[in-house]
Length: 64
Image 1 (cartoon, one colour):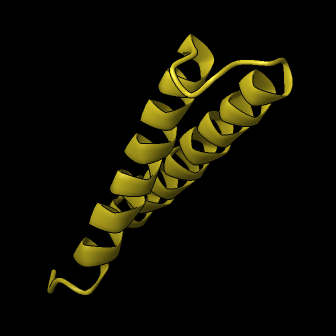
Image 2: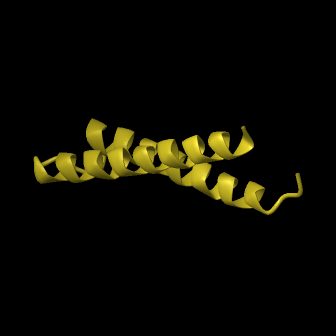
């Protein structure tokens, strides 16, 4: 069960990171500046996904 949880956390974190990056690229390509809503929401998603990956990395080496 632990492996399933870690695998789903990894998949959802990568999805959040990719969606956030795509939202930033899309917003900038359409002429949005650094404070455009799409850039801010995309940065939030990307940072949340990266943070979850970073936390997951630190729990992998923990004893069970």
